[in-house]
Length: 533
Image 1: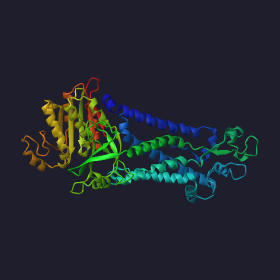
Image 2: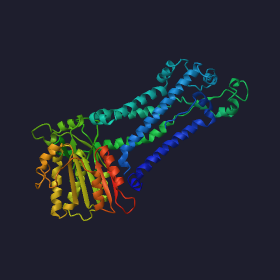
Image 3: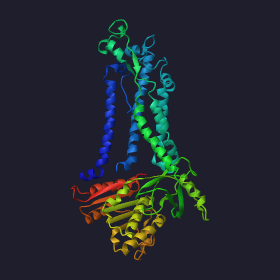
Image 4: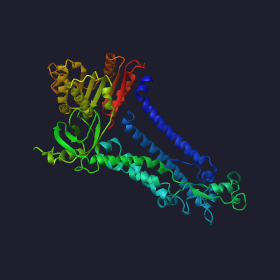
């Protein structure tokens, strides 16, 4: 339990606070409509009430998804409740309900009376309910924002995001229509309650059973009703203002000149963009948003920085996997054999850099870096920075040991990263500190016969695939053995575990961090960190 609390305690605390606020708001507004006398006749008519109700920031996408599912849940509850409300109100208006509801629905038919039932036309269901949905502001906006929400959620699935990112990107911006519709959804004030002045003259406790005598006896005049003022806009205006400010800042940043100094084509359909921008400062493992107006004037895509803070440029590696990346590949002239002049390169807008969990890598003495495929990019920045620090004889480097794991499906993915590992390998050996970096490269997409072919060359000084002294391994790591070995070699140590890879691997490493951490404060503790893209 103590190990779990170290890794997940603060995250769970934030989630519990957020869920507690949702529960509080739900209960609070339920009581607003359930207890006061001003809504007694409203409750009688409707039958029920409904309502709508530094490491943690790195998990903003996880929290964003949780908020989205909560919005979807509340929307479903709200919609279903109002479908029943509309059905009851329509039935009461046409006289197809109990006598009490029918009597309440007739209020407002005569002069000097205010209505309680928002359904004023006498049209039977289902036509009556459909008529309300297409003629009342609450119905129209309800349909629009529900459709927007359905499109946003369905286009946010992993399959759509990976294969049709543009669909995901554009439909996600329907949130603007969603929030505008949400802000005016209650402007018509269809949920009505008895006015305070009427409550003083018309006591609910005395008059509720004398509905046939309303207006005939002095103690029970005809009750007057008014709509509840819309409240949703108060919850929207703050976040929307912050979003507008963020967009203005992004627009200002995007106007700052970015110069592409070099484009490098790597194997495995990967290109490297080296860029310069005035005043740009970065830390290891950070990421930027990139827009190429030549490809799309609206789309921004996140990419991890692969350069080190010590370099006089910043770089990203981009794998060509979709329409946008294919367009950028062609715009940079990578589809041509001849040399591309710098002035012909497309304009690039950059927003960032933004922080990630990898920034904390130098705050540990021992770290495990785990990358899967192109997920190795944040660790390129880290390893480059380590190399520069060693070249400059850094004496204040707290980091003493790096365990680096790279999992790839085929050999082409290794080629663009092998040069950096060779530099680090040579640098550590020259400084008699070869044990500083322990790396394991796993080839996961090969079958046994292919692996046996390369195993013939296992005794050679350098690996035939990567050119490194460390031999390539085949299959997948035995994470239980890896964690136990590292824990035995570094007792009483906080070990940072950093991953950029798929969710299945994240779940495996998270469980290993918890199960292999000791409960006592002085024991070994594995602290799990994951990149979120």
